[in-house]
Amino acid sequence: MSSKIPILVSDFGLIDYQETWDKMRVYTDTRKASSPDLLFVLEHPSVFTQGQAGKPEHVLLPGDIPVVQTDRGGQVTYHGPGQCVLYLMIDIKRRRLGVRSLVSLIEKSIIALCRDYGVTAVAREDAPGVYVEGAKLASVGLRIRKGCSYHGLSLNVDMDLEPFSRINPCGYEGLSVVQLRDLVPGITMDEVKARLVNKLMTALMPVPHDALTVA
Image 1 (cartoon, helix red, strand yellow):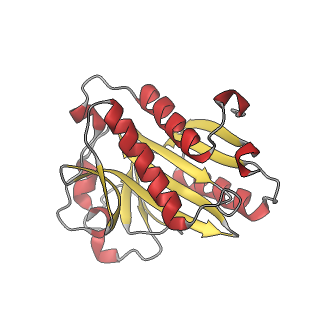
Image 2 (cartoon, rainbow, N blue to C red):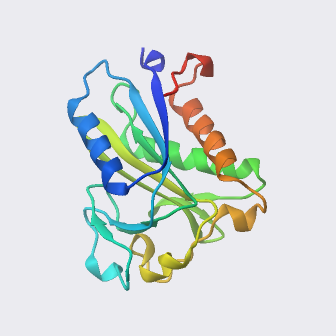
């Protein structure tokens, strides 16, 4: 049964974007039908990433921050210290998920996390991600290859938001961004990581958490 296939969780701390992208692609290309799913938890040094359909005009003034052309869906976004990034390497067929249902699962997990803190967050049908009063709190971008996902979500927790002004976030001119620190004073990255991993695990693998293997 898919619910008995383990999900291995790895917390890499602060790690280079290219190095992480390489890890995801290699695992996806070499995994077998019996391979466990993986969940990477991490932060990135400052970087702009441009999705497959990304338009160069949405990168306004990157300055000294590198721009990486990547293979996920979506347009340009920013990653930096203080942002909680979770990458999901999931065999979606084995877990009976479609691409849209996986995106919805991720969005609902973030919304549930916000609800725990008394923050009302919503998803939008026309623009993947999670929003608070029209400002973007979290981005979602995936790639599906060989029936398996990689890439995932980025949630603004406690970071410098200035670099978002150097792009049209996710291809939307003038889109405001927000972070949890400004909505929940005193919130910590460690607490957010633990709670969000728990939400995703519960949604992906509804079994007791002692059945999970944590690496």
